[in-house]
Structure formats: structure tokens, C-alpha cells
Image (cartoon, rainbow over all chains, first blue to last red):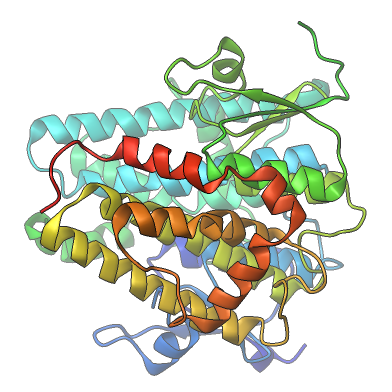
Length: 233
Length: 228
């Protein structure tokens, strides 16, 4: 497939863009990465995602696909004969993977994101607790999923990284940034050992290591956003 | 009260559109199921056991295993009972668009009805305008992504997106009556035509609550203060 047939519009700090990149890498798809300019948003972004005007947007044969988890599933569908399946093969396992990925997007990530803009210490503590509880739920899910059928897998996806690993793993960098900027430990060997060990393997995985932004770079980037965040509603 | 493992059980609530989605899908596929009506102000032990994370309906129980979240349940149904009618299109790009608009309905349109119901005066008017804008976006999007389809976005039979949007808009007249608004109408011709066609589908009539019951339900949700 010609490189220009597949384009990904995105930005390096975005965990959602990272999901798309990992999926494309798993399937060994050559693609052109287009760095979105923002301020103002590019014509390409406005045209290809008029509804949300957000990255990532996958453009395949000139057709746009939006929303990171939809993109991941699309990549899995189109390049189904390349490499391992991203979604589990069993329908029940698929439902579980989708459930927790939705949980990450609807509950965990929004709570994590809101910590920076929390008004007052009480709200900050409440949000931190919400994130901790969410991670505890994911740790529990991890144990159940990876030990199913007397196995002891490294990833939610089994021996290979899959849909839920991508959904959650893409947030690791920002999770670390949240820990550092708030002086809390959300994610450690004591509370979430399964997730921590899996995270290490995930971060060094062939499809991930070259596209996952380094935490210190994200931290620098976050600092440029922080002053703005502290003043927004 | 042990259910046979292969039995399909749906835990739901009669006024939950998310529940109706699943009931419709099961009927469409011809899957026999047992329905358990939950009292949402007094949730059953089983519901809390099967959906401890969200404690919400609907929950589908199959082979003794629970599946939660209506859109996830619909995809599960399509995958397990993969005979016709298929709920999702075969083409990956079409699937992506169906998922996109189903998500849009859930993330944007569904939550937008509450402010219209619960707010008054200028705030209510703003909420109505916001919703009208979303319907306009939906109209444009559907026109672009499903230009050929008339009856259903899925082709000849109801599919996932028809189910999601159809359930949501089936009782639009009840919503209009209670909120004194016109969200769905001739200004969105494609959606309006499609909604009215959906209303006639026998399974829709068979599954969704009648107009009067919905009016009563919606009225009971509104705070008892005089309309400004």
C-alpha cells in the first residue's frame, strides 16, 4: 500500500494520537504523519473532522476516520491479515476489552485531566481519589483477564498487546506527569503491580517504544499548558 | 432462581432508551430472552452483582456472563448471533461511520435533552438551540455518510445506527409536547422522513413505550415550578 494512501493527522503529545500510531505499527502499515499546527486549526483538520475538529484523524484513501478507538478498530478491520488481531477473538473478551476502554475514556482520563484545573485542595483530593479507584478497578480487571484459563499473560491482550493495552497504555505518560505535578503516587508496585509490570513491557514493545513520548518531554509540554489551565473554568 | 446458562436475560427499565436498544436488537435477531424489569430506585442484588462498576441498566446476561453498556451489548449480539440481519455493515469504513454517529448520539444528543427538560426561560432556550445545532450536524452527517439509504442506514433492515437513533427519537412527539419545543421536524428532512418511517416498524411499536406513558414519565422528571 502506497505510503500516501494512509495519513495520520495528529500531534506528538496526544495520547489519542498515540493509540492510532500503535495500532498502525502493530499492523506494519506505512503512513505519513501530519503534525497538526493548531492556532489556528488547519484546513485539513476542519474538513476531515468537521464535527469535533479534533485529532487524531486517520485518512485512508482520502476518507477520514475519527475518534481514536474507532480508528484502532478500523485499522484492525482493514489490515486484518497483517500481524496479530488487536481486538480479542472471542466476542465476550471483546466486550470486556471495549467495556474497560470506554471506562478509561469516560471516567479515568477525564478525572485525571481535571486534576490540574481543580479549584481548591478538596476537589483536587477528590479527583485524585477517583483516579486511584479507577486504577484499582483496572488492576482488578487486569488480574481477571490475564489469569483466565490458568494463564498468566503479560498484557490485557494476552501475549501480544491488544485493544485495551493500547487504550490504557497510551495514557501512561500523562499519568506520570499527573503524579509528578501533584506529588502523588497513583500507580505503583504496591497498589497496581499487574498494571505496573505490564506498563513496562508495553512501553518497550516494538510497536510502542518509538512513538511513545518521553515523560520529561510531556512534562515540559504540560508546563506550557498549566498557566492556561489554572485560569480556565 | 437459577437461570439455565445458555439463556439470555436482559435486565432493564421500561423507560430507558438504552434498554430498548438491546430489546430491539434481540428481537430483530430472533433471539429468545427473559426480561427483568429493574426498579432503578431500588436496584436488585443481581444488577449490582452483574454491573458493579456502573450499577446501571441494561445488562445482558449470556451463558451466565454479564455484558454492560448498550453499544457494547449490541456489538456483542451481532458477533455472537452473526446470522442475518447483521447490525453492523461489512465494510470497515461504513462500520467506522456507524460507530461514529452512535457515539455522537450518546456523547452529545442524549445528554442534551436533560437541560431542555429541566431548565427554564433563557437557559432552556439556549439548550434547545444547542440541540437543534446537534440535529443539524447529524442531518448533514447522515446525508454524507449514507446517501443511498432511505428506509434504514443499514440498507434493507434495521441496523445498529437505526436502533440507536430510532429509539432515541421514537417518542419525539412526547418530548415536544412536554418541553414545548420542536427538535425534530421538517427542517431536518432526511432525519424527519426516516424517523416517521421507523415509527411504523412493527418491532419499534412492539418494544417502545407508548406516547402517553412517556409524557407522564417526562412530566414527573420536571421540577414542580411554574414555567417562566
